[in-house]
Image (cartoon, rainbow, N blue to C red; front, side, top):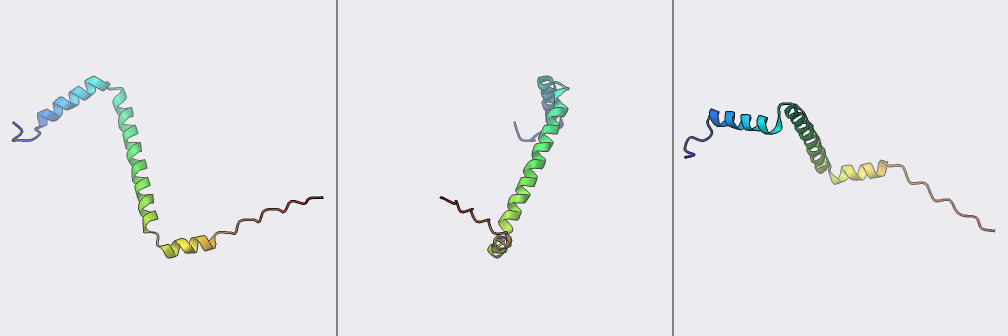
Length: 78
């Protein structure tokens, strides 16, 4: 039954069912939202990969380069 795999007419039937179910007006919006989601996912994956590649020595340099926190003001009592 699945000897030949997916044939072109199978894809045509799936496309027709999707258009009937969702309507032709919602499909572009759905595709746009899916594309934006994929872009966000890719950018987050790149950021995580860049964070993972940071060496401990580079992290220590960044910590040393940060300005010191201001000292808390002493409260005067009389």
